[in-house]
Image (cartoon, rainbow, N blue to C red; front, side, top):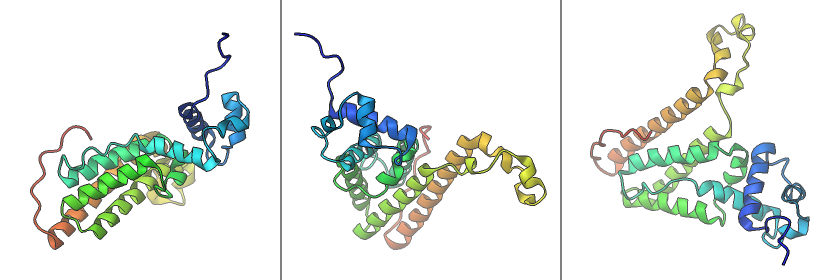
Length: 221
C-alpha cells in the first residue's frame, strides 16, 4: 500500500499550525482558507475536526492556557500561589500575544481555561476568601496579566532622542526604553503583581484574619 504524500490531518496539527499563523499574522490575518492552504488540504477537510473557525480559535486559546501552571494552589500559601501563577500565566500569554484578545473574552467551554479557573477559585476559597472576593481576585488577575501580555510599554516609545529633548523634559531617556524592553516590561509586571498581592494581604487581615509570615522567597521568580 503506498504511503500518503503528506502527514495525516489531526486536531493537534491543525491547532499547532493555526497558532503559528496567528502568532505571525494576528487574528485579523487568520482564516480557515489560509489555514487549509498552509496545511496543504482543502478547506472542507478542516471541518472533519472542527465545525467552525471559532472552534479552531477556542482550541488555540485553550492550548495556550494549558501551558499555565496552577499546581501551586493548595500546595503553598495563597499569596505565593498567586505570585507563581501570575508569572506562569503571563509567560504563556506573552509568548502568544496575538491570541490574547480572543482568550481574554473568558473561558467559555474551553477545558484548560475552566480547569485553571477552578483551581484558582478553589484555592482562594480554601484559603479563607469569601466566594465573591475569590471571583473578584481571579478577575483582577486576568485584567493584570492580559493587559501586560497584550503589548509592550517600552516599545511604545520611539528611539529618537530628538523627539523628546526639547518638548518633553521629563522624557529625555525615553528613547532608551525599547532597548531595555524585557527588563522594563517584566519589571513593571512584577512590581504590579507584588503591589496587588500586598494590597490583598492587607484586605485579608482587615476582614478575615491574621496571616502567617511568608517563607523567604525562592529563586523561581
